[in-house]
Image 1 (cartoon, one colour):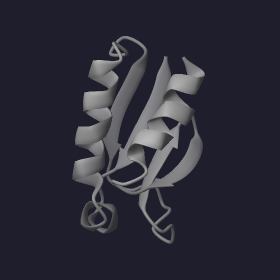
Image 2: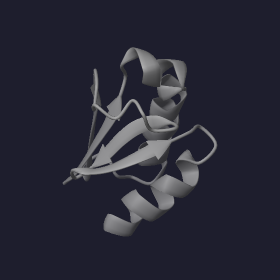
Image 3: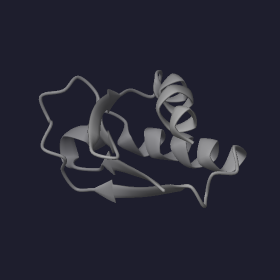
Image 4: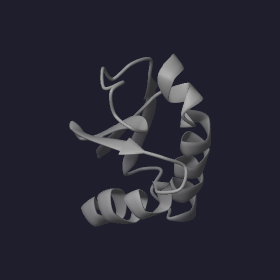
Length: 81
C-alpha cells in the first residue's frame, strides 16, 4: 500500500492543500486505487520552506501546487502501482 500524506497546516492550507486533497481524492477514485493508496492529512510535515504544499509518498517529500497535482499523481502514484 502506498502511504500518501498531505500537509494541512496553516502555511500549506494557504497554499492550496484543500484543493490538492480534493484533486488527489478524485484521481484515486477515478483510477480505482482506494485499496492501494492510503491518503491522510498531517498538521505539519516540517517543510514550510518549500514552495508549495508539502506531500509525502512512502517517506519521499514533494512540494505540490494545484497546477502540478495531476502530473505528480501520474508519475509518483501511478508509477508506483
